[in-house]
Each structure stands twice: as C-alpha cells, then as structure tokens.
Image (cartoon, rainbow, N blue to C red; front, side, top):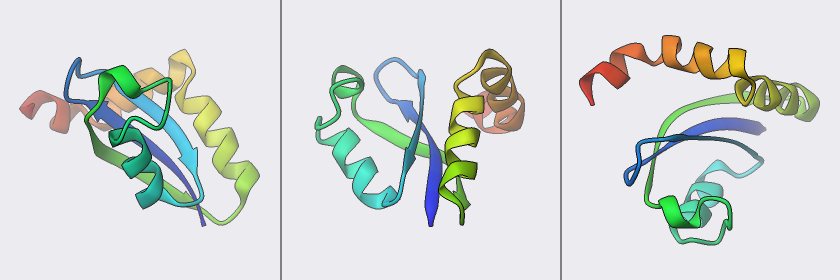
Length: 85
C-alpha cells in the first residue's frame, strides 16, 4: 500500500503533505527530526491519510494536495477538526 498523509505541526499549526509506503515509520521519522524539511516544526499530529494500491495514483494525489486547490480542499475537508482545535 501507498499512503498520502497530512500532518499538522504542534509548533506553528501548519500542514505538511507527504507520501510514504510505510506510514508509521514516516511519522516517526518526522517527529524524530530525520526529515530536514520538517525538523524545525516537530512534533506533528497525523490528522488525515488516504491509502492507495497504485503508487502513481498516490503520487498524483500528493501533488494535488500540495497545490493551491488541494490546500483549499484540505481546509474544507477538515473544517470540523480545524474549528475544534
């Protein structure tokens, strides 16, 4: 399986969208500072993920979620969660 996930930083509350074949390990890597692009914003909460059978479908979804339209969709999709936090 392939995963596209959304993390939310506990430091600045910004989102990080990523892709992985091993979701649990990837989150551990983010929270332990092994990822250079997220190191200064750790720790993170996993707030959303989707699983895919096909790698290219997952990569296409990740690319979309990182676009402006995708960011807007994330905010709409998670509006209940975001309004409570």
